[in-house]
Amino acid sequence: MEDISRMRGKIKGQIKKFSGMLVKGFSKPDQKFITQVIYGIQAAKDVKLSNIARILKEEIPLKKTADRLSYNISKEDISSRISGRISFLGSKKIHEEMVLSLDIGDVRKYYAKSMENLARIHDGSEKEIGDGYWLCEVIAADVSGEKVIPLYSELYSQESKDFKSENHQMKRAIDTVIAHVKNNIVYICLQKAISQAM
Image (cartoon, rainbow, N blue to C red; front, side, top):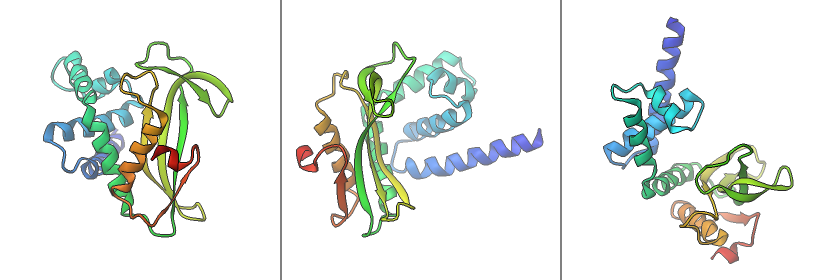
């Protein structure tokens, strides 16, 4: 039992260190929220807010914790600020011989029926249409492919009222990454020509 407690403390410490780098410059409530969500997802092995709230074991009713998490997760600026921070942290590890790759992928939700903005997607692995979300990612890799650095990752749906176009999503990813990465790095766009997004 003592080993489990020690391991739990070590994991909490590592999460706090990681989230501390991620939330630099955020308000105290946003820092608390991001740290708790990262810990909650790891501990619950689930992304459902009710399960994250349960893991946090706050001394308030479970519903109030879940409501607070729900309120914070719906803030529009949080995800874009986190994306910017990830790009900033990743950019410190990039050198001139690396290639940046932008890819539009998908996350299939086989059993989901009522998730927000669930969309029809082309499942690239199964080569069929299914329900899920599109995924826009940018990574940096050295020529050998041994070192890979994530710089940007965002799920999106054409069913969202804020959705404009796939090109808009790509441009947003490119703009976020370019703000932190030197211009002399080569960009490869696997899905579309980069000029379409510009």
